[in-house]
Length: 137
Image (cartoon, rainbow, N blue to C red; front, top):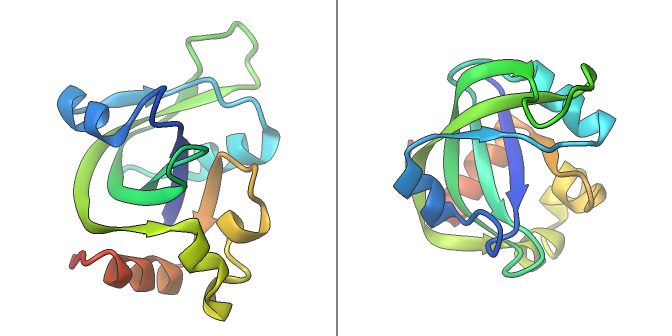
């Protein structure tokens, strides 16, 4: 299993909306590094759901329910989409400041590559952040 982080502005598509919808297609990614991460996702992989810009915090965990396919929002074949479903709420959100202030997370994509909308998370990072968020898997 691989672990990821996906970002959405809460004013555009908040975690609560994903929970209400029960599933969503992750479209509109127009960065090659982020696209490559979408391409590498496998069904069953877990991804932190991060509220960017407003909040700047991890609020839950989503699960990949459909692997990459042509992004339906464009005719350009270079871009991909992946489907996610909500998996688990965080009991306590984990803010970007918390991660930036902890030397353990200095090499994490979220900390190093702040503008990357779909990032990799190591297994160790994943479980440490779950612990900070009060989540047991």
